[in-house]
Image 1 (cartoon, helix red, strand yellow):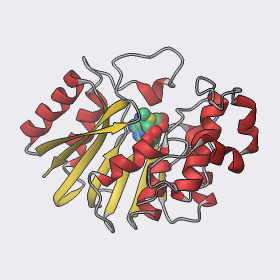
Image 2 (cartoon, helix red, strand yellow; image 1 turned 90 degrees about the horizontal axis):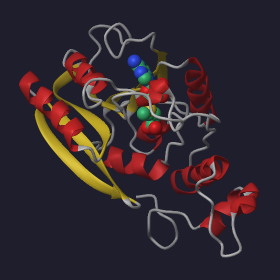
Image 3 (cartoon, helix red, strand yellow; image 1 turned 120 degrees about the vertical axis):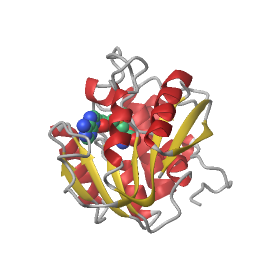
Length: 247
Ligand SMILES: C[S@@+](CC[C@H](N)C(=O)[O-])C[C@H]1O[C@@H](n2cnc3c(N)ncnc32)[C@H](O)[C@@H]1O
């Protein structure tokens, strides 16, 4: 498992500065990094991606600042290694697709809807010399995007999950899942996934600690014939969920 010297999954700020000296500008006299600053967050996460996971990531200046550690912990909840996987909505970093390829030796296909994010993702894939197949979505989730008849061991996503647009933090495409609790995107994903999974295949969703959202997706999954497992994991001060639906 990737780890920094002290055995913990994390990176001391002083080590991050060695990789990206520009970070110095955002550190106060007590050595604390100003994580409320977007540029500082991007640089620090770039350093984590590089030091812990050997990934070279370029972040879009206005996209979600995907944190590498939470994404790695999520992948570990359902990947054994070597699976054929599909990621829906890889974002501008393509972080999880890159990790699935480089760290879990998976055969990866990933999709993205947004034109600029797609271009960033393409360059991040190129920069890391991996074989991820990147497909542009025109608004579809799986159906109409992935060739009919193609089957995967796992389909995973950090889906948009807000009911309505949020102020500032995320673009609408990144954030809005729709439905009463933000579940609509995920529900459509798990419905469509049934035609693209091998027997015994699974869907894994990266979700926030939001009970009504998880319950809505879990109930729909069970009605469709999946068995459901909710794995809760801690990242820093926050709880995250990996909802795993198995056929
Ligand atoms: C919450 S972000 C997650 C990004 C990244 N995977 C991560 O882990 O941070 C959701 C992503 O899905 C993309 N997206 C939204 N609708 C999509 C669709 N129908 N097909 C593919 N990607 C989509 C958004 O543009 C955004 O990049």
